[in-house]
Image (tube, rainbow over all chains, first blue to last red; front, side, top):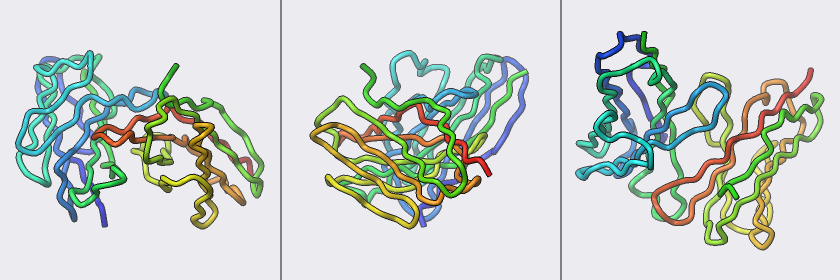
Length: 118
Length: 110
């Protein structure tokens, strides 16, 4: 149980294009999903917290107009990197919190999406 | 002071030894504590979580929590080369966010 999928697992795009990454909780419902970015040999950096049916909460320094997040259902959140540039190349990882978890706030991670912008 | 502090390592132990990974935190209101393992190029996977003072054992892994001293540790018994990875300490203070440490790299030498 507690499986989170991401699609695509990797993507290569040209500078200036937009890329959409999907995050799905496969066997549980998630009111809250999280988007992280990780550069090589660096730690996870939380970009935003995505809540079903409401606007995402972005961390300081993360441009909300560049990283569009939509959490349209209890099992799906999407991150769109708009007008991607080479500096956006990174490993994007989502995680989800089970709606039934009222105490421990355990997060289940997706396998990640490696974005390369040429 | 960082909210979650870990020694970046690398920590190198011989196969079969006990690997000890430590983590300190600053917020005394922290409630849940997690240890994740992350292999290079992969996303983190949960090893175990702990929320009460004391020890919690799961197979070769033991998590130890001391809230008074604000530290949490992970012991890996009978370390194997496949345990070589980065270990992330994380905590939750009761809100939505989980705070992650930068991770400790572990190398288990065959």
